[in-house]
Amino acid sequence: MSLNYKGQNLFIENTSIKSIVRKNNTPFYLYSYKKIKDNFENFYNYFKKVSPLVCFSVKSNSNVSILTELRKLGSGADVVSEGELLKALRAKINPKKIVFSGVGKTDSELRLAIKKRVLLINVESESEALLINKISKKMNRVTSIGIRLNPNVDANTLSKISTGKLDSKFGLLSKNFLRFCKSSKNLKNIKINAISVHIGSQITSIAPYKRTLNAIRKIIKLSKTNFDYVDLGGGFGIQYKNKDKKIDIKNYSNLVQKFQKETNCKIIFEPGRYIVGNTGSLVSRIVFIKKNGKKYFIILDAGMNDFMRPALYNAKHEIVSVSKSKKRIAGNIEFVGPICESTDTFLKYKNFSFLKEGEYVAITNVGAYGSTLSSNYNTRPLASEIIIKKGKIKVIRKRQKISEII
Ligand SMILES: Cc1ncc(COP(=O)(O)O)c(C=O)c1O
Image 1 (cartoon, rainbow, N blue to C red):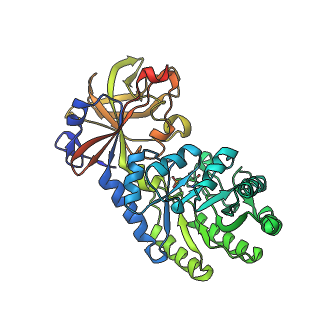
Image 2: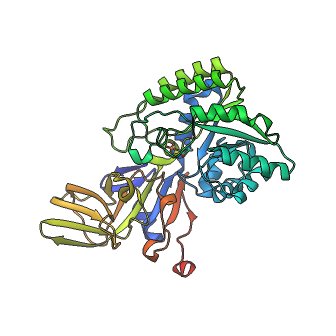
Image 3: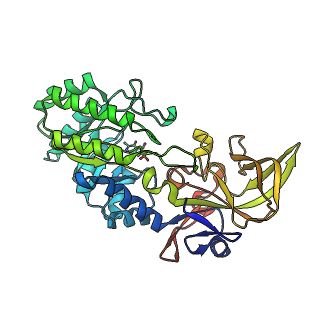
């Protein structure tokens, strides 16, 4: 996580959260630039020997300032919609470092990607490839595509974020993949340049990655196609709690190195969570505290519209107080949001630092799939986003005005 205590007070790097809430209304997302940079560089360094192209997965965090910082660190982008593509371009990411994934790209999305000559459009169905060929023909272009393989590998992660199994909507199963490689030979306006995979998210074991590499080896051999790129997707898990299992990326990088030597393809990765997950917190004010029966409800000004992962995936994100008290409260304590849904709940504790109404807490490790999953549910405006860079507090997205959504 990007936060630490100095005495009883919570800090992000050397800036106290108290000093930030004094000038900024809650709830707001708060990121550490240093942590984003460290994560990106650590990730790259693991795979340095294969000189990969790292295409940050924009769906995990699409703030244009963050994308700009990542671009300066050398990142490309993995996008899944016209909006994400436009954000990546706004961040001045070179189209030759952009891959476009997704199962249901529309005509207009494909037209934009073709026009901008992105590095790869990762195709997920034969119909999509035919449509790209047709549009490219009209535009007098030959478009570079990847085909997403569904390797039928269980990523051993939450079923709701698993994408590489037989019954999932993603990619082409090997039989269809091979059939398409053959039949596409007469499609003159596309060029199959890559094989892509993405088997799921928050993966903490390298065994599924190993099985995926083997599935790709097999397909390369059977398809007798020369792929310039192999896009290995994202999915690298992070530690939400200290005791969570840590993925052994070093070991995986050895496997990738061996794979690259055999296949001679350029390697692409699409990490999202690994780069930004532990770099952000959601800072929130306690609106009310009430006791219902034996339970204390700590009602925050952040709700499931601001941060959806607990409601959507039952994800657990630790909560910390901005000013730690020496006193503790014991009993059934539940942090909830203000929204009219029982799923608008964040986390339960049996014991917590004593809290009062009007004080602040931070929900931790929300840098990935936090702000990007937020919504206007209950006609609530989107929260602001703030980054700390070299001791400076910078608002990188203003809080939405209610008038903008009415
Ligand atoms: C195609 C694709 N690539 C990359 C990612 C990023 O995954 P993660 O944030 O787990 O690295 C996703 C997320 O689900 C995805 O769908």
